[in-house]
Length: 152
Ligand SMILES: [Zn+2]
Image 1 (cartoon, rainbow, N blue to C red):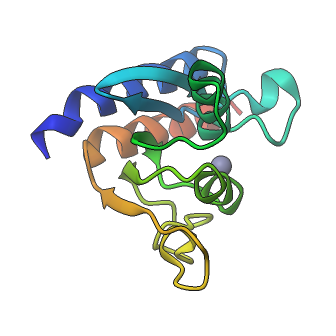
Image 2 (image 1 turned 180 degrees about the vertical axis):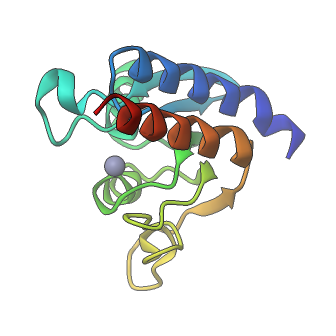
């Protein structure tokens, strides 16, 4: 568990970049040989792109870095449980391990609503660790929405 904390902190740093842009604070990093090779934060509003999720941006960058679509020997860290789209991309990029901070009761597809990462019928299954810096990841989101409501 301890080894995951610095990388989850890096994902939280990404989430803060989203927050600074008034985006929902979600961040992700892809790690290969203990080196971060992909970073992403939610940019849905800024880019007006429904695909601009933190995980997809980090995966794209990692693939470019490795020059491969298969992210073998990589780990993906994300502050919030992946949605169906991102869980799909994780399976498609063959990432072996995903570590996420807090669960998403509205869209989580890594065990909460569904578990696309460990679906027996798919040709790839992902090792999942949840709850790394859970409190921190969760409170960043609740505080963001609280401030948003306060302003409205
Ligand atoms: Zn997503």
